[in-house]
Length: 161
Image (cartoon, rainbow, N blue to C red; front, side):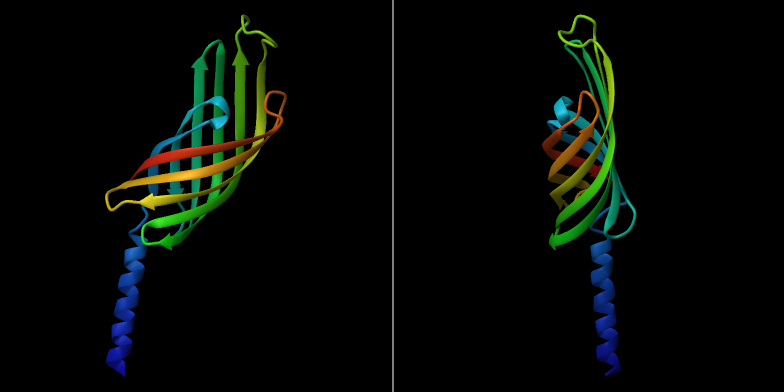
């Protein structure tokens, strides 16, 4: 009986170790989507525990008489689907700032707005330190420029370390 109990403990500890090695504490990369007109976003994830992490994003645009900056922060819960496939859900918010040049048609003004965001997605963690993801991020803005609901679907690729 003691041998069976010892074998079960060893098998359980190996399985827990294998699961813990599946995700790294840090990941940095790109999130490629609409991002409310800003396009790509530099993205950083910081693991807090086995199932929780923080995600930070920085999007910017300097083009066609428009300068924009967007900072996003999310708290995420990560759940294993099967093997290296995970799904995650999160909530957070951020700050967006946009400035129009004087030659821009319409209101040549600077606008800053706050927003709240949700996040749901799937990801695949390769055996090499690369992770890819596909997520959906609805955002509700509070400001003159961004005062509605935006829906963003994006593909992400990150290097884990």
